[in-house]
Amino acid sequence: MGGMACAVFLISTAILSRFAFSQDNAQKIQTLMAEADAYAEKTFEDQKAVETYEKILKLDPNNYDALWKASRSMSNIGARLPIGTDEEKQKALAVYEKGLDYANRAIAANPNGSMGHVRRAVIYGRMGLLKGVWDSIDLVKKTRSECEKAIQLDLNNATAWYVLGRTHMKVSEKPKLFRLPLGLGWANMEDAIMDLEKSVRLRPDFIMFRLDLARAYAEEDEYSKAREQINKIKTLPTQDAQDGKFRAEADQLLKEIQNK
Image (cartoon, rainbow, N blue to C red; front, side, top):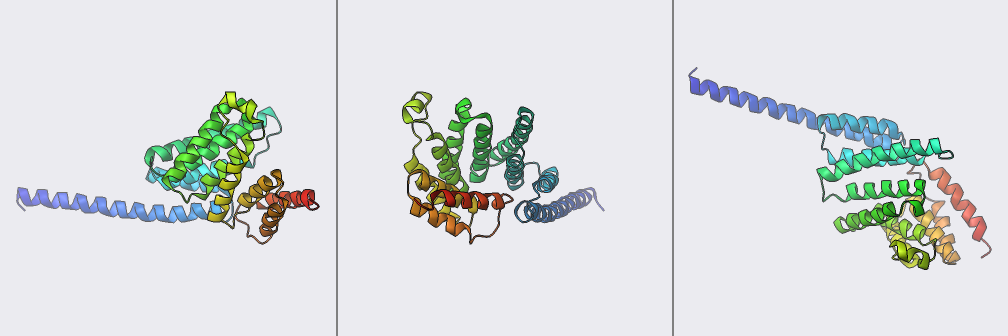
């Protein structure tokens, strides 16, 4: 074999080997993603989900879906932790910090992906609630900003509309005159309800969205609409590890407003 032919042969072999390796990795990633998604969305084993998403990230460190989904699972883990003591709150914050890191990496990998921004919004929101909304005003503003960015990138991102509506509702608990000097005068219950309604239209079978919409209606004395949402919750399938808790909260809300 001549020198030129030998060089061509070696280059061709290298290209084919790299292609085969790439195809093998793609198949592994596809299999691992299905496994991780099942942990996250079917059996609600978020720790196992994170561990499996990490296996994907070892093969592809910038895998956007693995990054934002790992952030989602860390957020879910944090939301289920006890927070009765300062030590417990610190442990939950550490989990959220890890979730924030995944979200930041997702956005770095794909700045124009809506899910990275909404996952960062969720983490900011939960960290803000844990620290206290009025002690973490910057996090509140960041939550709103990330939601708006996510919606700008995908008008049909149900979670983004939900978190934005929830943010309006939470901030509106304080009078507007109190909030104005803090740069939070934008929050209002009208927008909260519109955003929550949008989230329910986009994902009508998700219990948490309907529960907070019912709460918003009740807050505005729209009790008939609140009861309608609660009654609908009774017919919905379980899609979240906390759906049992949400159903109990919906039943309690119904008792509180049944004669109003």
